[in-house]
Length: 593
Ligand SMILES: Nc1ncnc2c1ncn2[C@@H]1O[C@H](COP(=O)(O)OP(=O)(O)OP(=O)(O)O)[C@@H](O)[C@H]1O
Ligand SMILES: [Mg+2]
Image (cartoon, rainbow, N blue to C red):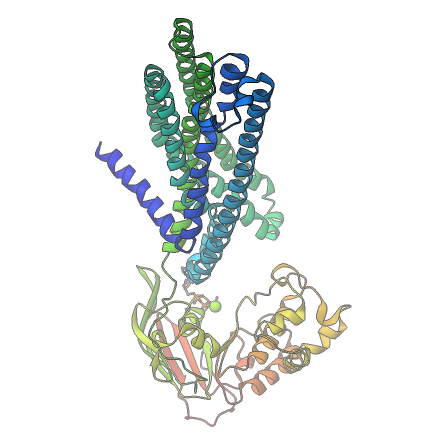
């Protein structure tokens, strides 16, 4: 029981959350509700023309009092009556259709707008989530949620409580009118509503958990596809396509089985509800016919009530299928909200003042960091780099060089200690301002699936073609780009796959040139480049380094010829192999060991 209560609370919490998220849409949601309620009198009027036809046109009963205003001559003419009733039928029918279309258009409009806004919000949050976590595989899941689960907001906020209110009000209207004509029939209709509602309630709890299972399996299968397709080269070269296929089939198969299980469940409930409805209808018909035979009710009234009974079960059935559909919607909404609740990778400091271009002093104070709790990568690192220094970072593979740089870029925060730029803790910089201070050539040089020119211009919004070409020239990329058949308009393919590793590096370098930031970060900028090209690039880096603070990670010492400080990373520590100022800048570096 406690379990059920907490489940109900949980469900209510999701609805409340959905409504809060939909706050800007509250006026429109109120309008949707209003339009829904207008449908009730229309539904009540629907079987009326048939009743009038049976009682007043075919039968001899006098017209109801509300038609007294018609000319007296019409009252006695069956032909005139016939046309009056046809007129009423047309008016009611047209009204119902107009209402239906208006209702539909309005709901679609509100729903789609709401989902679009919500998707944008999810995407924004996904982009701010922890980079480490996203890169470690969370990205596929987030993408799936943004695509597939975002509509959960409209399924819950719009198609959640509102149709329930409208259906219950419709139900009450039908029962009330039936009660006015024949109380016993209203009681029968009400009595069959109860088992129906119990069935709905039973199905409710069961089916949501099953839908959640379905989602888990389907996401897992989806990730296998994405992962395999993005590591296609490895899969092919290691001959693992069959393995990947069977891995996919296993997960996808589980998804299909789970989905079929849910559908079996839903159809069983559907069957039970159908049988209950049929029994209720037959009971009302039986009693109604007896009443008509006994003269206590007109035939037209029976027709009217049967019309209501047929419609009476419609809102109940809507409630039923609605509830099961809602289980799916709730599962989706919950998964989408989880994206919103994901803490930001690095939190923005709300009160930070805006800052302009940095001088470029970098200070680490007792900085410690670990990806996994028991495996520290950096412990108690302190260093101070004056503006304009050229810092070389060396160390074994896996020593923590990229980690050091990632901390400086504030892709993550240190667990202890602090990092300062121009004497200000990185956490007291606005993220936008901070990101503007760094031009980065990363170890993996990710390019976007766009043209070369677009990739370079990515560094600065509104850069002209001349500026892009100038940056490429300085990075030593201009010549090879011009040699391509489409030059700067060459499409580089996904992640830049149509270019060689060295070409990608030079484009990334051009991008850094164009950014013109006070700090320059190069993570192995020449790892994929031959000796001759390297010389040219070292030359361009030297040009680029002027007036900036530079951190260059390199395994090849030739790349570090410019360095006036050398930091060696190893064993969690960073030691300065050559203090700044000890030797004249730009002197060749000699390294021990
Ligand atoms: N996202 C991550 N999650 C967990 N551990 C990580 C992550 N990134 C790096 N590591 C671990 O932290 C350590 C330092 O990695 P880092 O990338 O800083 O090394 P590196 O010095 O740049 O090496 P390389 O010269 O090969 O680029 C390694 O042992 C690595 O396995
Ligand atoms: Mg590295």
